[in-house]
Length: 105
Image (cartoon, rainbow, N blue to C red):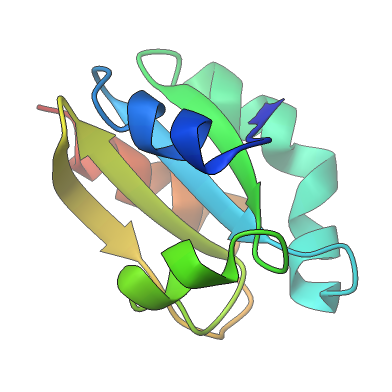
């Protein structure tokens, strides 16, 4: 998973096809639970490009997208949001894969 480093990069990748942003933070225990299965999630959703967004580094973008709980996932396709799994609950690998696959255009 590629890590977003700048706001410009964050905005530019939204214009690509089938993009997944994973919003997380290093201090988040529910995020840490997903780290070991992220490669599996990416493999099962190979039609998507995945980007990691540190909530603390991109707080303004999180506010704009109404992301107040992490881990959260938002998908985009060519600049349009196609889905969101945004809440404060712990997520399972199966839940994330099902969500992502349901947003494919």
